[in-house]
Amino acid sequence: MVLCAAGPQLGSLQRLAARLEEELRKSGREEIRWFELSAMKLAYCQGEFDCWVKTPGQCRARDAEGEIVAAIHEAEDLVLLDGVTFGGYSYALKRAQDRLICLLSPFFEKRAALTHHAGRYGRTANLFALGWMPVVDPEVAKTWSELADANALNLLAPRVGAAVVDDRGEAEWPAAIRKVLSSTAKPGASITGREPLRQELFAAAAGAPMTGEGKPPKRAALVIGSAKIKGTSVSETMARALAARLNQAGVSTEIHFAVEFLHEEKALATARGIAEADLLVLVTPLYVDSFPALATRMLESVARVRAGSGASGSGRFALVVNCGFPEAEHNRTVLRMARHFAESAGYEWAGGLPLGGGGAINPGAPLDAQRGPAEHVKRALDGAAASWARGAGVATEAIEAMAKAPMPDAIYRLMGDLGWRYQAHKHGLAQSELRARPLESGGE
Image (cartoon, rainbow, N blue to C red):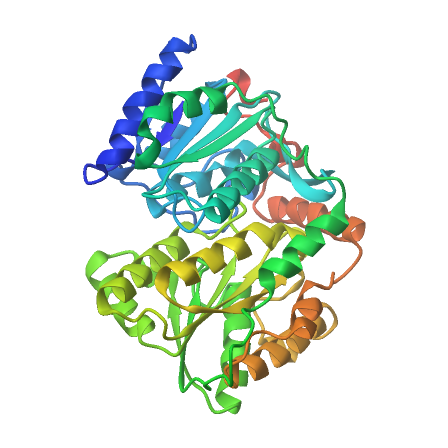
């Protein structure tokens, strides 16, 4: 099963796809399902979790994604083929990937030192990720491999393999593909404990060292990466609280939503406005270890606009990312991706705030009216806003405050599981239906 995003304008990727098919057949994989995502119209994940608590195991959007999910369920191997986009996948591939969570159960369990979702089905496909760049950047390639490992761990894949190639080594593509497909690496095998992951998190979140006196921004653009309806997301709650703090510090702010990038014409106009801001802050949930599809599209659009306008070297970029798992360490890879975007788009990296246990924040009330689990978030935003308003990178104290666990991980997992059961009850589902297996005969 191959998920490919090699559009007609991407000649190198198309040649790589042809090589991949050859090597798949040579390896004995004779039955190959191929989905060219650049030519498919797919809905984006709206983050409502209906596929867990309303129609367990099935996305409510009725399009070709249903066929993709069924094919992955039947496959022994899943191969992701894409142009490397800030160390991760492009919008075309991310649309499909975000909606694969229906293959998982909502219930929590601990694997490789961190919380993950349990499996829905008894068997899962191996995951292999093959990426292309014009010229391989070792740090970006490392992020690509780390993302593949995190994805495979979340999807309970038995084996994982990843590689990034470029046109300079085209003669070596077959060997690189064979190495990926023959990989026996187990997802999460390199994780020895939580502390090394925390060190990686803080290293990725730290802002670039100041080379002189920072120039205070006059105008900031805040983009909400959640695709949920306005007024219903944790990301919006945090973005509005951050905007209030920046305004108080004398920075003019404007708030945008990632859904503004659904249509090409509006996306271009919005990207131009965002690209001109002195400070860009993306406030987003974590979707499958990286940016949601629409947030990815926003970043792609802004990077293109800035490349064409010669804005390189001006402006700063920061990330506020919230994860539904209790551990902030899940955000370490997306923070690396944010740094790659900043470099690609000519921004100075202003640092990131990683939140774990985002489910403890009430999206229906202003953040500053909340207490308890919201206190450390407010302290983090206080510190970050002060730093960003004077043109500096985010303070270490703000990163530490945001990364603080709102409650013990085991209690969060217990409360989360009870929350899924309560939501199913509200929708009139029997508790047993939460573990439904619609892709198997009988659905049991």
